[in-house]
Length: 227
Image (cartoon, rainbow, N blue to C red):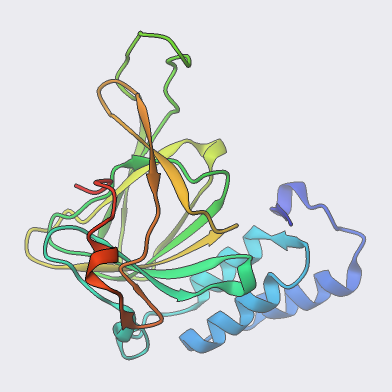
């Protein structure tokens, strides 16, 4: 599967596909179900325009009545809750952030990530890749590139060419919820120590799938990737 953006379109000669995608852009999905169906359509071939995917994610306006069944919170850390597997081409998930919860600094395992805020407010901090060489004992604090505040219905996009990032709920009073799309799906990623740049492999797991709670033993085996 090849994923491109408008600046590096790989299938510009495919007029029929471009026309269909432009038609989608002119309309707007109004429900979560419509968004999922439109994403399945966007990912049904081996050539995917990630800008079109972002347009779809942006067009959906958060409706808690639609996503609340996926919103499973944990008292101590944020949770990933699988909504749709996208026929193996993408994962769509709801992430729930309790007050003050945040992720570790992490990469995206050569995948594309689109994130949308469904409730509350999130802070995204992006970092440059560490300059430490493999096998070297040198350590150096990660360089912060930018910090963004994401509010209701805002979206952001990241892939490994843009660096690493950390996402956190800055509020000490209000929980936050976000919708994430990863393509292609991945089961492991790397997390990074801010002070040294050292990385550690981390397994990506789900707190729940399709709105159903998972076995507590599975949930408790999660690596300590979160704060």
